[in-house]
Image 1 (tube, rainbow, N blue to C red):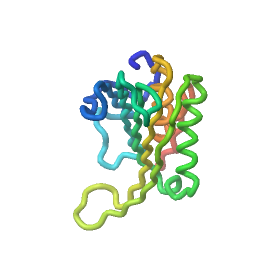
Image 2: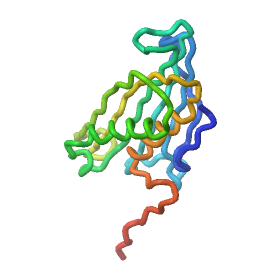
Image 3: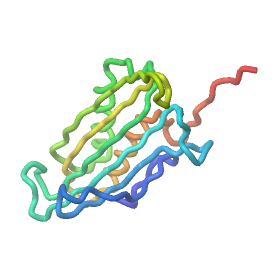
Image 4: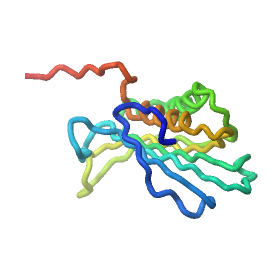
Length: 178
């Protein structure tokens, strides 16, 4: 999992895995880096993060259809126009399916949910008055010990959710008013 090659604006590192889901587990956290700052701004556009957890049970698990299970969670802030798109959940799910299938690593039992939310803050709650988020939860059973491609697919989906341009493409900024 550590050998995966991911988008240069995504930082990946080990995090504490859950302890009770399987006899053995390992987890990676992934976060979109903000090059303009070392910290995430309170009202930053496009904040996104996720975690990918590997569960392993040498006895196997009938629900997993194998001995390993990858569990993914991605959360990303969205702009209002994208959040209002009724096809957003289908599109976000297709990002995951396409990213996994394009790498050719065998897997089974893919399932999950995509949730798009819009929130309005009132009173003394900090943050932007309107907030929109995408949340993707998925799990699948890899049928190979080569897990780097699964990490790469996960990070590709995180990059899409964060609105990062593809590697090698420069995103043009809007002209400054002056």
